[in-house]
Image (tube, rainbow, N blue to C red; front, top):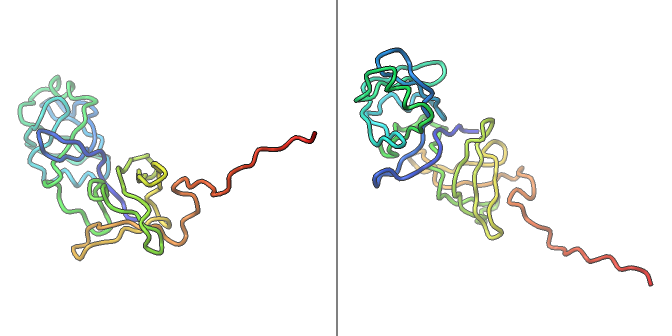
Length: 196
């Protein structure tokens, strides 16, 4: 199944952004900070700015690839103490500034709002969100019966693409198990009758 990258979408000063990870602490003594990356660390390579939780937009002076993750040298941070103050803060990028991912890799924000259909094409619901659950990503799908979590992994979900190879909709495969949407049985349990 294709990988996804990044996570939660928020709005920062009117700009749609995607959470790329969070700061772990200083890297070196000149203000660089290590980032725990959600998804592919390569998405940081060409970013000229990031949105730091509680700090706003900061220019990216230098990106250093680490194993795993990255270290960011941000404008205005020149000391280890300054980088330490970022520990635990989330870091975001503007959706329209993220690099186009390679084939078969999708950003979470590309999947939100897409319809989910069954193998025959009948619409089942809409992707409200995508969660990074560690070992797998989960689609949060709203449908007539409420919400359901569906694993975004083969062989259950197919990402249908546009001519530009970007996601346009999702569909369950014929191999998907029954009840992924938490469907209830049509039969109502009859209360047991006591013998008189």
